[in-house]
Image (cartoon, rainbow, N blue to C red):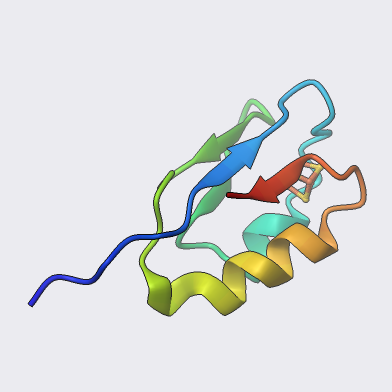
Length: 68
Ligand code: SF4
């Protein structure tokens, strides 16, 4: 059975400074590439990743992440 996907991650790329703290918290969802660009690996992560994603949102020092 597939999981219900109720999360949606919104990134404000203008605020992001690619310090990769979100990647530490939720590497399944966030990746900072070699050019220091934040790449959103999953815009709609599974519910099982909610805690990690919420931690990432909290950890972002720029307030560049939010959940919908
Ligand atoms: S923690 Fe915030 S500022 Fe840092 S890479 Fe992630 S979104 Fe960008």
